[in-house]
Amino acid sequence: MGLFNFFKKTNTSKLDNNISDEQRFEVEFLATIPRYLSIPKAQVEYEIRSEQSNRLLLMAEAFPEQFDAWKTAVTIAEKRRIIYAALDDKFLTQLELWQVMERFTKDCSPEKALLIASENSTINDMVSADYWASLANANFILTNYSQAEANSFKALEIDPTNKRGKIALADIYHINEKYNEAHEIYNKILEKELGFNKKKNLNISELVGFDADILNSPIYAYSWFTNDTQIDQDTWKIAYEEDFYYSPHFRFQYAHYLLRINEKKRCFLELLDLSDEMPWFKDGVLNAYNLIHQFRLEDQLEDDKARLQKLIQQNNWSDPKLQ
Image (tube, rainbow, N blue to C red):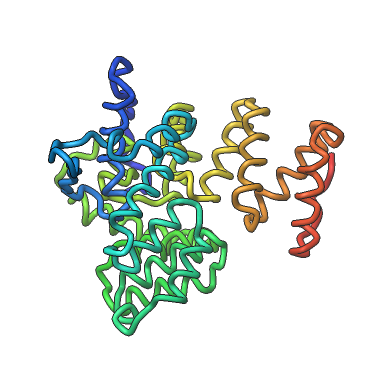
């Protein structure tokens, strides 16, 4: 079985543009809950009623401040962050520690996930495969690869069937150029999830998306995308916005895809945003710094240039070759 043998055209249909903001917020709010819980396909009944009349409230009525902020948010990541904050008031203290860690890792805050783990882990967490898999995910996003590998080994030592631990280990192997080991794990997951006799004509959301819960790996996704000429700009954009915005590795590869299709401005802006939001990601910082010089933007982006120079010096990273 080849590593990328499952591609069919992705369904890019969106919500009806004619529905109201209140209806759209309702749909997105409820659809975000499984992601917040880190439980794909979770069936959650979430109702809020008026304390005065017991009338069932729309989410826009129950969370008016968040609704107003959501209406002005531009990206899916920003909109989810707003909904996550609303859910925190109701659910955060009820989540297991691994779910709290995932909630912050997937919200581009892996450092906070690690801090929460260090301050709140218990004896029970030490024997939880999910805890160690979430620790691996946070360390991986922060490029702490040796720690992430040790964490994933611990998860699989506790539960060899833990899929999140398997994906974490495969992603680490891939980044460390142990491609055969990584692809073996990916393929075993696909074989287990799909079976040899099940349909293979899956679209991308069905295969790598969170909701389908088959192989939700940013590393597998970008490896596939860069090796398949059928993957178009819409597919990259959907995966980036819907599933892998939290991954600096995917965002970096997406930026390079934009460069390959001659979207130089979008590539540069993506790298600049990546270097700002995830300043620990070396390749993002160095490439953003390099492009400032390539595009001769030193005067217009003096503050960004200084910020990137400081990061390079603080981390003892090699200066990129200026062109």
